[in-house]
Amino acid sequence: GNTIAVVNTIDRLMKLGANVVYGRKHGIHVSGHGAQEDHKLMLALTRPKFFMPVHGEHRMLVKHALMAHSIGIPVENTVITDNGDVVELSEDSISITGNVPSGIELVDRTGIVHDNVMKERQQLAGDGVVTVAAAISWDGKLLAKPEIHLRGVVSPLETSLLQQLVIKRIERTLSDRWSDFDKSLTGKPTEIDWEGLQKQIQADLQRLARRELRSRPLLVFLLQTPEEPPVKVTGTRRRRSTAKVAS
Image (cartoon, rainbow, N blue to C red; front, side):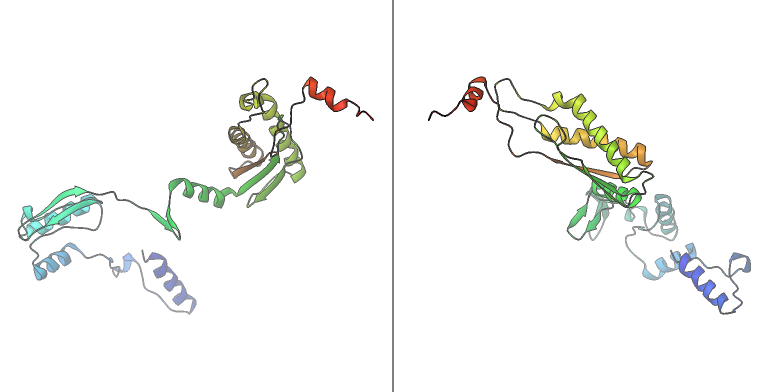
């Protein structure tokens, strides 16, 4: 844990012209952890009734417990635990009585950072984010050129070329998959599964970005739609709309 600090200190001393003697070959290296005899001395001085080793891997805990037994601490007064174990201690005994949830949890300013959020942050840090916004009509057509924004992305393509690729990909999805998301029935108001369509286009654009940008940026697709579906004009309504007003 102190390796970097030690190395930096040696470097600074040598830059000042000092002759630094260091390393195991000179017989002066000392571990930051106590040796077995140090632990025995500590146990002999404190004379604990119960013993629970807490530092290191499981094999180290076992060795530490065996060392405690060798200097007189009873086996029944020793427990070796895993993370989350509940240890119950009384005047005459010590034992493991249960287990609680445990592990590593990352905490942000507002709460616990879950795995999916961490993956997104790692993806943002590694390959950046691509945002695409597009407006689509109720009959499955692009209403305007999509807006594309790249943040933290190294792109081998010109923005204009990337935009053309995005347009072609969206139009292909609309052409091939529109019927899967158009839930309208004959004679009924227009009903579109916009959420499903948004997810499909985002997945297709994600594959496009990985292929063309040669990286794995986080892609966010923002779908914009007209507020109201178009009014279907019937034959009667069409005749009425074209009729002349009598004077």
